Length: 624
Image (cartoon, rainbow, N blue to C red):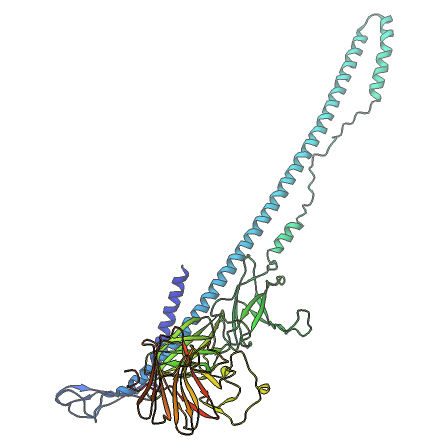
């Protein structure tokens, strides 16, 4: 019978038994119900669902159905909401049981295959022993037959020689008798006397000869005891199984691990009989020398199958594994060692390095894993108006680095998390962050800030203190501004429209605008060809405003000091606009085709503070 037929039959029997058990259990908890006759000769019944996951039938009250055929509130035939919930619960339970039975059937199939393999190996082992015994007995028979043939030949040769000697003696005796008779018949006495003496002498000599009339060889053949000790040893060895050969541990399969477990498989390429396997494992620590006495302690698991799940392991750790096979005769040599990895730890999203706009979001994170990570998965789900997570989840797979630019829909809110992936499988989700695509959102790049600048805790307000630091006390990095007390913002590298606002008081001198990432750090914003900015200068008589690029500004006069300045960047049109956000007043527009991505820039020319407002929706008048 085919294995699939056997498995299918078992599954059918298990499924039928499960259905009968579930039906009997539901029937045992179902109360008796009465069918109530209705005026007019018709009958109907009412039933409801208890909270103990069983159906309860109740007799309905005597009432006439409505003319439309629908039940009224007093005679509801079926509580639909409760019934659907209970049916869903029962269905989930049945599905769980079916899954358990399928897993059990799979386990039985594995055992069935293992029994068949062991039986086949044992059958081949017995057949080999049987052939060896027959070959040994046949060789002994041939050797014995050859010995008997040689013994027969020797006996026949001995008897033949004895027969020839007897014939010769008879011939000699016959000759003497005939000669004596001739002498006896002789009439010449003289001749008789002359010849009789030699004849008598010959007769005397012949009589003196000792003729052996016994058989020169025995007529019986020797029957030595056959030495069948080696055959006995072979017969006894039928019940002695040889020690198994070394197993071969398989390389790690994808998605075969969790954060604390590994699923390990191996194989045995010989016909050995195995009673059980022992799987040894220990973590691989990079800081531990090879000859160190503090090497991690090895552990072992004893199993009967050629696979095992090892639990209680370290997160994102490499493990060295090897396996041995054992039967009644002995233990095999150890397999070659293999390296397996548990899945990585969840990454940590660097929220202050994430930025977004109405069309996309740039997410950055750090791996947090010492061992290599193959790739990352970014998962996002749209949230509702009340912050509830939607069932629709998108995944971006095979992200090679620790950042990802995601295309999104405008005016939505998303929950975004990241998983790290290695050959063992994906990690758990990182802590999710909320991304809104209402407007452009960014943080300030602290590594570009002039040493005299300080930032608020939320990262959106910069301060220029009254105390002047000496040049020797300033720590300048390669990316920091050295002359202009400025800082750049981390704008998402997406072409399109971006809008943010800057809040300053009328006593603060400032510069706000955009600049290329490689703008000169030892110059002033607006004084070169890589930056565009609006500058405020406080004079004793008035507020002066300049819109600088390459050190040149048009002659403009602004009568109302803008406390909140709107900055609108449009890559497609090649414009940078400034507005008085409180008055919805346009101040100035730069026209330039930006060849590279630009970053928001902010500078304080005297002690004061400046606050950035972003993530807000651009007003309608900004991109007209």
